[in-house]
Length: 445
Image 1 (spheres, helix red, strand yellow):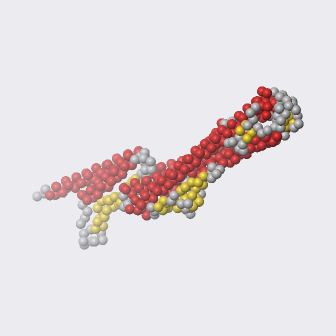
Image 2 (cartoon, rainbow, N blue to C red; image 1 turned 45 degrees about the vertical axis):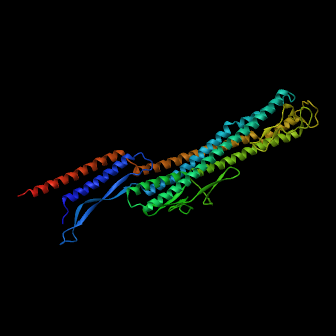
Image 3 (cartoon, helix red, strand yellow; image 1 turned 90 degrees about the vertical axis):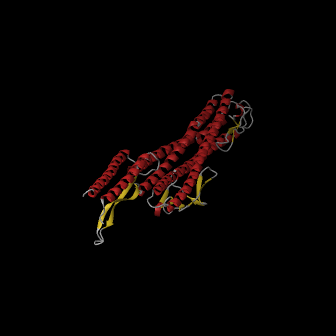
């Protein structure tokens, strides 16, 4: 039999009510992190005609086909990829800036220059007690500055490693949660409200995971995701209800490496990669600083052994240690500075050995080496900052493109709210008209 007005109107009311519910849900979750805008898709509802024409179809209103999440998987993948690159660059720049601050703010360069200046002043009167004491104190200050710089760099490294370990813990927590979401998605009914909520949760977890490391994804039935590290050929992070375990190992030089289920893993993007790169630069800076401190120690102590001190004794070492962290001034007074040539008498005004010491330091050029270290770090910071800003701009553009599709526009939702409300009222009016018609027919005598 032909479809009646009441059937058509009631189906329209149900569809309008479902659309109103979805619109209201969009509005209430407009600022919720990870929420993807929903929309209702409806299809025409057809019924068979009378038995004499079984193939004839009459329209009998509409039905709600599904609730659709307005998210493009390609755009989501681009947001994750560009976001991982931006996170790597940002983490690396932050680490490099901390290294730069640790080296510059402690004033190693100035302390080296001041020590050399004190030696130059001593040339004017090699027996002057105040000038000799100044050399020792400037040397002590220089050694202390090296110690402080090494300690500051150690603190930077500790901070980076702590953040990296926190990132590893976060990755393991996310992969475990993704595995649980996969299991729930596999059991959820298609296009249900529970499934759409799980899909939102899945996408948010994937976004958080990509902030720590670069990932590739593939999606199966019901939205179940398989995640690999790096590209699609990389080791598996999540498959079905199983998540792999990421671990971090610290080398003797402070650099870090990663394993995935006890197998070596390479992380090329994400915050973990940025921190690893910053720690590599930190290890290089530590090596350069240790080499510089060792050069100063060896140069000064070698020159000391070639001359005699103020008491006419063979010069002894002024510094101890092998690097920046343990460098120390061991002379107790200015008399220990060996200014005179070997064989000179006590209180000699001969400055031959002092001149040799100054020449050796000039040839070693520790101030120039320190300036090179500072310039290298500053150049790295400047270059990486440009890269970070460019990658951040690309990532921002990808997010804007996704937000335009998946985000909630309150103005547009207000229009939809009015539209579906009017559709609901119209369906109600149709039912009222149908009721009036039937009552009129029934009242005919």
